[in-house]
Length: 89
Image (cartoon, rainbow, N blue to C red; front, side):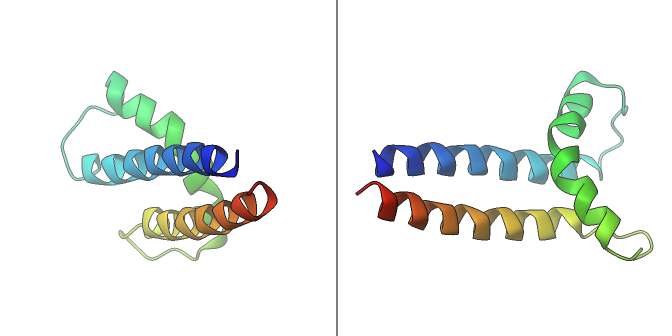
């Protein structure tokens, strides 16, 4: 049971991280912000990025919130996986 829940958690975290990376890469492309893919990525990733942006001081044109979000998600994923595996051997 623990491995199954850990696998689901890992898959969900991977999907979120890929979406954050895609959003960061698309920010360099001249894509219409109202394009359905751009809107979907924005709506999906903004709940993860907005709290980090609110806590960080402004760094000018650079937005480091995707890197920090990926780092935090990775750490939380590892910790929760260890907890799940220990609770449900």
